[in-house]
Amino acid sequence: MRTAPWPVWPERGAEEEAAVLRVIRSGRWGGYPPPGPETRAFQAAFGAMIGARHVVAAANGTVTLEVALRALGVEAGDEVIVPALTWVATAAAPAYINAVPVLVDVEPDTLCLDPAAVEAAITPRTRAVVPVHLGSAMADMDALMDLAEQHGLRVLEDCAHAHGARWQGRGAGAIGDAGSFSFQSSKLLTAGEGGAITTDDDELAWRCQSLVNCGRKEAPYDGFEGPSFGWNHRLSELQAGLLSAQLARLPDQAARRERNLAHLTALLEEHPELGLVPQRRDPRITRPAAYEVVLLYTAEAFKGLPRDRFVQALEAEGVPADGDFYVPIQDRVQEIFPLTARQYPEIRARYGEALTPESVHTPVARKVAYERTVWLHHGLFLGTTADVEDIVAAMLKIREGVDALL
Image (cartoon, rainbow, N blue to C red; front, side, top):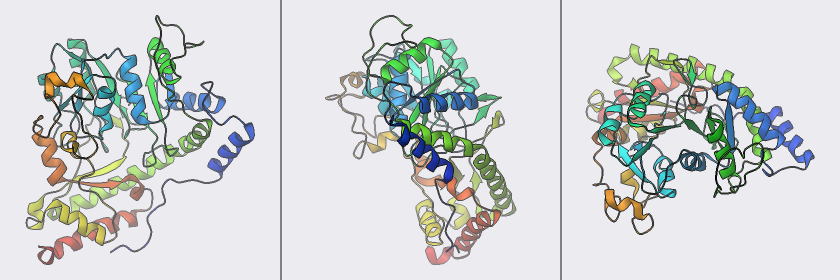
């Protein structure tokens, strides 16, 4: 169905070239001492968009989770509740600082952290909750913030998919105690790599900046008690310059994605026989962001055709797609998340000698990961309505030819 190229990602041009050339000519390429002039300019602009008083730029979106958790007071043996359906970094970050990631289930329609599952998982050792704003949706921040207040927990929003999203007028990353953003190559805002921590808390921001800068306490981020044992997680000036150029593009890109996603939703409603329903967005989301367009697949609409076979057929028709974009984290222990007590002894009380697929029961995450989700990257939605129509035409063709596939 589709042989023409899709919109290029990342979009780039003279603005990015000018930013890099400006940094090269300045002679200040690295991140020390932080923040450099490019980083300072980006932090101010990004904070204004998010609605956060402080932004601390860092090397990537994994270390921002790690730094923020430590700055929030999470210590060895503390439990940190995270969704099972997310990238492994969300659970790895607490493990890296000798805390214990507690994997809980997600809602079947938003695919985000289930507040009821969070409440059931709270123990006297629970210190923090990390909701992930996933795909094109946001976690139920009202319910999660209420739970945090009731139980004295810190909330760190994982906003790797949610640049510019808003919940009841408040920016993702400015609702909890802190937010963590990724600027990795596929993200809505990218410099190839990079990350940022957002917060309104002065002391938390100072601690984060110190931890990012090898534990140094220097003005103006020295207004907290005690020493700081940190890392070199600084962002380079080259990355910051690119991010400023990319940030200027973000509003137009978001508008194009939303127009095309609305067109996709309308077409799917016109063809209920496809049985494909977009991931639910809570009506309290007042400004959406779409990192991945996630569709819920119904095998019965395709005579029982497994989701993975549908994705293969969609790709064969020229539409890039994923099925198991994310799987439950506990299922990745043989791949990239071998969490063992030998290396991380604080997990022993909850998981024994190692986290295993049997250690955690998250049936919703398992079902949506292996049977129900079809993931379409946001770059597909930066073009025209004709591009969207090609996606739906491919789906209709697959349904017409389903007997051959079966």
